[in-house]
Length: 206
Image: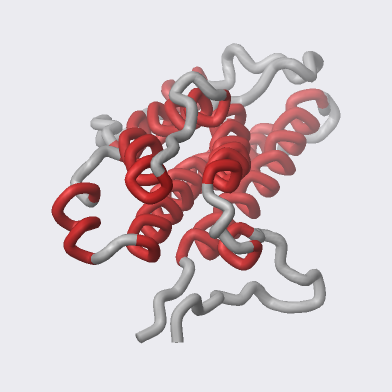
């Protein structure tokens, strides 16, 4: 039976959507600074809509990436009974602390930057998936731009920094887990695909 490394698929989506969100943020900034274009408002609306979709998608798929990887890691190194009975029902943060300890006897430092980034990613994801508003009014839409200062490069649109943190969390967590488990192969953690090939899903078991 083949098991696909789904975290690679999820990471590709997260990374590509962050890249798109950054481009859309630049477009919003550019349109807001352009006083000559008569369709400026429509352009801002389009760019901001594209930005929001990309940033939010990146956050959600970063969360899927880290959860998929730690589940894959536990399942591939422990028996099904061990994983199902003791680890599967843990929350995401606990999984990243407990599963490596269960497998190797060592755990990622709970005070590390990687765990801090994971906590931030979890908070961002939870804010999105537990969002209870059923309708966003035009006033709500435009008020989200109220604090954005297009002339200030440090001023960012909502969610973009959360999306960046999500990608950082993935890299940092993988870096930390490799330090405590030398059995993790390059194939399991290598994200980059060849530029002249489509993204591939790798099989880890025959």
